[in-house]
Image (cartoon, rainbow, N blue to C red; front, side, top):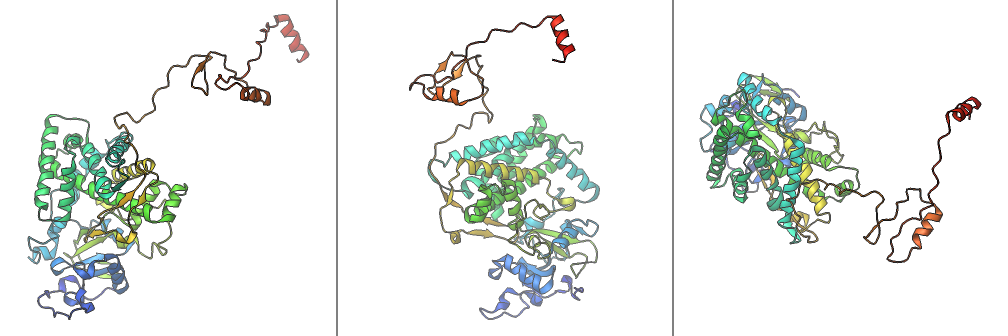
Length: 510
């Protein structure tokens, strides 16, 4: 495709200047210059809208976000990878964004939390990025994943204990939204902060409700307390390693990176768990593959990362210079939307969307390049271990509503399942205080045999192989008697031949 002649910086019309189409007209989804909007009633199905844009413009398309701010959305798989892997051409620092510098974006823009610059590694470049990112990845490298998986399993059992006797539950509100927060609080070193309130605060701030600011402040206060505590009381947790890293992060930098890790891991993993469980409960073929051993839980998670990535897009990347991407002319200062969901279904990469992607991790769910998600292994561990433990505990779990009754809350960044009602056979709670390991076997007395009656026998144990005679003798034993195999008479011990006899046998070749 040849580059189009226009660029986003040429769009000077505002919504007020554009003519208003009549009700019901398809042009309602169009903004100034005939560019499609990624918000409003006509953008409720973003997946379908992305495919229309792909058909019209190819791998990169012009769009309008809230308040008719112009951007590019990157739809192609390879184009997205090129963008995130080319820091010389594209940056995450929104301070270079032309609409922001020109005053076109107001301070109260609804997407400000997604692109507002912060002093964290996600927005930094060069040496500053290496310093901040190095501290985060260094702290990540200290996580004991074997111990983490044991904790995830115990937490899963504790969450299931809350509803296992009821026979019904909402797996979003009572499981998927809680497990990632409980695990991340443990990883960060603030397990005592985990409760229903912090889960509600995280979900509320991501929804952008009227109380979102207060919810965000609640989480910030908890992280501020944690940072101060670890300065004086270090322990073996993520926060302590972040505090003690040679990069010497300030308290503000530590708090903001803790917030980034906590919220990003929480939202991504909560969506991932809900998406995987929904497919297992609604797609018989998917569940049959899982139950039949053709697919493991980690493979099911990777398939979901292809089909329903936790974040559908990330806003955004910004052009550092005039360039070309996907056949479009990109001007310096233009903004680009990292299209994770549309990139994952690029026909050039997945011509058949029904084909399984087991073993293929080239999806865009965790980004790429310098800003690739550093906590993706934690998210995978929580989803893999938690879902497996849940299905093992409740193997008869079934969807408790019609599939078409399921509802989502969608935004330009993600699609979150509201509820996932299920039913199952009620079960008693499990004791989660026990260590998740096999109990040591008691000392065994030689010659003792545990019988089918539950009593112990002092008869010698016969270690001969089973034969028809021994099996018959065992089967006719009186009811209630200890069923032991008949013991043959002990043979007299044989004396070892003398030296002369052994030499003579060797000479003869015996």
